[in-house]
Amino acid sequence: MIQPCGVRLAGTGSAVPDTRLTNHDLARILDTSDEWITQRTGIRERRISAGTRDPVFNLSCRAGQHALDMAGVKASDIDLVILGTVSGEMLCPSTSCRVAAALGATPAGAFDLTAACCGFVYSMNVADSIIRAGRAKRVLAIGCDAISSVVDYTDRTVSILFGDAAGAVVLERCDDPAKGCRYQTMSADGADWHHLYMPYRPDIVPECDRTNPIRLGNLRMNGREVYKFAVNRFREVIEDAFRKTGLTVDDVSQIICHQSNARIIESAIEKLNLPREKVLINIDRYGNTSAGSVGLCLDELNRAGKIPDGKPFVMVAFGGGLTWASCVWDT
Image (cartoon, one colour):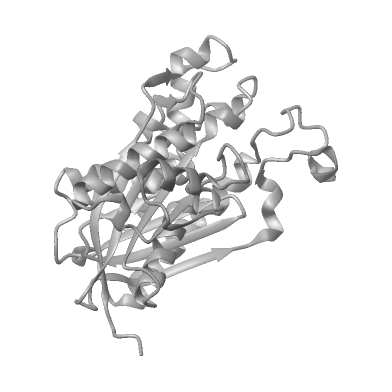
C-alpha cells in the first residue's frame, strides 16, 4: 500500500546562452525596428545559441546541474529525468537520456516530453504524480528549448519573438503530504494545431498555409490566433486555479507565467487585478523561451528569495498543440 507523501521543491536551476540578439540587431536584417518590436511584444533582446553545437543538451545539463547543486544531491540520487522540449537535437535517443548520462544520473529513467511552451509545467506535474505514486524518490524535471535553431530569420513574424533557455527543478519525496502540487491542469485542443507548428514534410502543411514562405523544419505561427488563444486561456486558467483551491491572490507568493508576450501578461494583471510585484516579467531580457520560460522565471524568483516556505505559488503556461497547463504548488 502506498503511504501518503508530499513532494518537496529541493532545488532550482537555469541556463541561457551568452550571445545576445537585440532588436537593433534584428533591424539590420529585417524590416523592423526596436520600437515596433518593443511595443508589440515587450521584448528588447533575447539569448540565442549562435553557432553552438547541441544547444538543448548543453543548456539542459547546465540548468540541471545548478538545480542539483542547490538541492545538495548527487546526480546518482536521481531516479528519473524528464525533459520538456520541442527542439531537441534528436528524436532517438531522447535528449533526456544524454543529459542523464552527462550529469551522472545513470541508470535513472529518462524521457522527453513534448508539450511546446507548456513543457516545464507538464514535466513538474508529471514528476509530482510519479513521486506521490511511489515510483520515484527524486526527479529532475527540466524545460528547455533552443528555438533559435528552428527559426527562419528572414521571417519577421516569428524570429523577433523567441530566445533560448533552460529551467530545472529537483523534486523529492517528503513526509509532509501538504507539500507539492495541490492542483494541476494539463489540457490540449489539437483542432487548432496549425496555428503553431513545425512541418518537416510538404504533405503535412495544411491547405490554408501552403503559400507560407517559411522553410520546412522551421517554426510557423499564426500570431493573431495564438494571441487570442493565449489571452483567453491565461485568464481562465488562473481564475480556475483560485476557484478550485479556494485561494486568493493574497494567499500566493507568485504567479509564474509563461513569457509569450508582455502585452498578454499585462492584460491578465489588469483584468484579474493581480499585484505587479507577484507577476515577474522577464521577456524583455530573454524573449519567449518556450519550454524554458517558466522554469527560468521560477529559478530567478527562487534565488531572489521570492518563493518562501509555507506559501503556495502558481504556474501557468500555454503553447503549441494547442496546449495549456497550470499548477498550484505548496512549498
